[in-house]
Image (cartoon, rainbow, N blue to C red; front, side):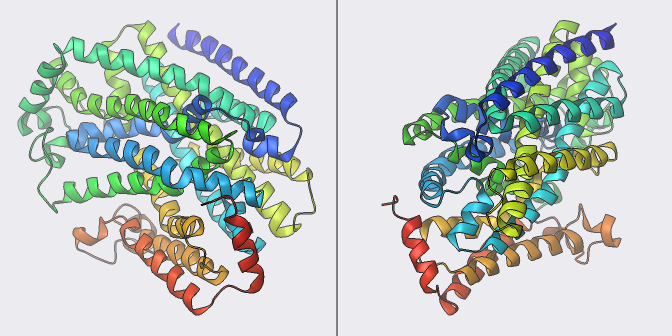
Length: 522
C-alpha cells in the first residue's frame, strides 16, 4: 500500500514539473531564453535555484550519513557552504561574471572563458571536460534519492532510477532554464519545509537541543561498535570533537570539507545562475536569501547525522552498511508514514533540482559550446538549442546507465566532481575576472595543467580512486594519498596561468577583447 501511494504521489509530482516544463517551452523563444532564462530572474528565484542546485540529495543524504560517522566536525563544511559558497561566490564572482557575460554576450561558463580569450577551441575543451565528468555527479544525486526510496518503500533501486531520470529529463529537455529555475523555487520550498520539520521533530524526540547533543557526546566507542557503526574508529575523540590532527579521520574530513567547500566557486552549473539575473539588485538580494536557504539545508542535515547514532543505540538498530542508508533507515523506522512521505519528497525535490541543473549545464556544454561555437564557429544560431536538447537526451541516458551500477558512496562522488572543477577552472576563472593581462596561452596552461594534475592524482594517488583503477595508490602515506588534489591543483593552476601569461603575452585581438570584457567593470 505504501509503495502504491508513493507511486501515485510521484505521478502527481511529475505532472506538476512537466506542466512547468511545458510553460517554460512556450516561453522559450531564443537561445538566451533557453540557456540563461532570458536574463530576467529576480533575487528570490536566483537564490532558490542556486541553493537547490548546490544542495542536493548528496548533501542531505550522503553528507548526513558521513556526519553520522565523523560527527559534528563536518559542520565546518556548512560554514564554508555559506561563507564561500554564498558570500564569496556572489560578492567576488557573481557581479563580475554577470557584467562580463553581458559585455561578451556569453551564455555559459565555457563560453565566457572562450570569448574572453577569443578561442572556440578553449571553449570546446572546457565544455567537454564539464559534460563528461558531470555525468558522474548526476549519477551520485540519483543514487542518493533512489537509495532513500528503496530503503523506505522497498521499491527496486533500478525502478527508482529509471523513473527519476525520465521525469527530470522530460521537463529540462522541453523547458530549458526557465523550467529549471521555476521548478527549483517550488522544490526549494519543499526542501525547507521538510528539513525544518525533521530537525525540530528529532530534537524534540531527544528532549531538546541540549539533551540531544549531550546524548551524542555521551556515546562511547563501545556503544558505536555495538551497532556496527564506523564512527567507533572514525570519531576516536567522540562525535562532538575533532579527530586527532593529521590522523586518517582528520585527513578524510579535510578532503570532504575543502573539496566541496572551495570547489564550489568554479561549478559551471552555479556560475550560470549569475548570468540569469535581471540586474545587480537581484544578485544582491540573492545573497541573504541564499545564505538562509543553505543554512537551513546543510546545518540541519549535518546536525541530524550524528544524532542518528543516538537513535540507533537507543532502539537497537544496526548500522545499515552504507552511510547513504543511515538517515533513510532512521526516518523510516521512527517516524509516522505521513512524515516519511513528506521527507522523501523533500529529498526528491533536492535530487531533482540538482539533477535538472546538471543536465541543463551538461547539455548546454555540448549543444552551445562544442557544437555551435567550437565546431560550427557560431553559425548554427538557434539550431544550437535543438542540438542541446538532443545532447541532453544522450546525457540523461548515459547518467541512467551509470546510475544503475554506481561507484562508491555519493559523498565521495560529489567531492570528486567539485574538486575536479575547482582544480581545473578556479584559477583561470578568477584571473579572467580580475587580471587584464591573462593571455590565451596562460588560460590553456592553467586549465590543462589543473585538469591533468587532478586526474593524475585521482588515478595514481588518491586513496578512494587509485586502488580501483591501478590496484593500489602509488603513495603509501595516508597523509598524502588522502589529500584532495584540489590543495595542489589550484595553486599549480594559478602559477601556470600567471607564468605562461607573462611569457606568452596577449596579442592585439586579445587586448581589444579584454577592454570590451572589462567595459562594465570598475
